[in-house]
Image 1 (tube, rainbow, N blue to C red):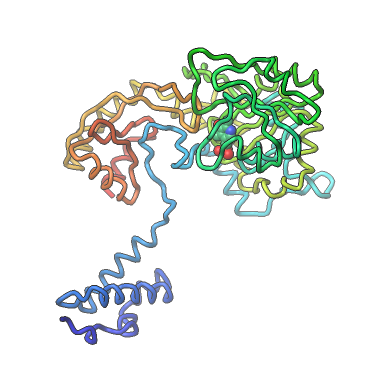
Image 2: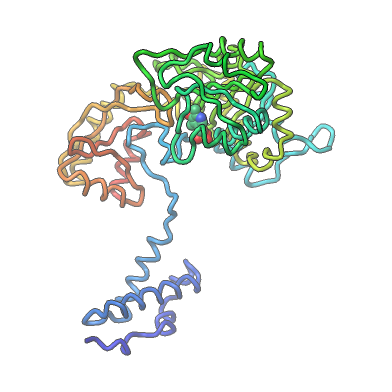
Length: 445
Ligand SMILES: *Cc1c(COP(=O)(O)O)cnc(C)c1O
């Protein structure tokens, strides 16, 4: 049995910790020393480590502890808008705007013309109206809160009519029926999972109806024997009954994606033109900005939403308002959008370019990692619920053997590399790799 009394005291060890205290501060070093001593006491290794050995261990544990848990990773999963990896990457102009808003006071709710109080929404309203053709617009924390506040404002204590084919779960606790309940409205489901007709809505409309709702079934497709009622038809029905139509687009996009060789997603301008009174969509999905929830539509509805006390609870901060404004500005110049907006740039990267990159990198990655590496076809996805059944041809590296062990090793790098295991290989889809150097630097680290 080792004699624990021979272990050095915390005070003795602290005396030799000058540089460590410089870096991390005395309280943190003290905590780390105590933790290391406690581990040794619990395990009673024989022989006991000496003071030098204990200090080496503490230096190591403090270095790894000091790395941010939220650190940059390489997203080589093939899913461009990966929710668990933070969705959209911001454009440089958006990053600069956010940094400027963090560094200095900003005229957030201050009208520079009159010197009086201004409105936080005014920075984005004009741009949103211009880009969507809507009468008015407001912005909140994310699309989930956009849906919540719209429902609460328009149908609290009343019924919201939705097709059974559109009662989506986005993930986590975001299920349309649960959001309805939290918003204080009564879900009135109509139709069936695969087929909903105009008469289903008409029969459900009554004195307790607050609104009609259409939800973009963003993360799944119902195929086969199906029927849904189009947005223009629903708008007509709603307006005849004096009710608003709400369209939750989810991802939504401000441009026609076909221009960049992608399959089309509904644009917000289309949804507005189809007669929806309110359209909601996300900031950090296809739009390529920071997390945000946009609400565009009829002026009196937006005014009512802005007066709802919930608005304060779900409002957006100045940093994201600045970044959102800069992102929206890029949409004024669609010709240069793909050069400036990382999400679109990555989605539009041509497969031959990615394959050439894979060919270049394969031998170098094999040499660095000492494993088997071959170039492989990949099928990238947009992610975040946009075009769930569509894939984009891509290329990447397939690593083996022992993909689990390789995946763990790559996750443990100081810039972790996140891939995907498929058919007993670790697949690194290179669509989201901005340049070769980033991968080579990461595997050297
Ligand atoms: C993603 C999505 C939401 C939630 O949006 P967040 O910005 O993640 O809060 C809501 N509705 C639909 C249809 C979606 O696709």
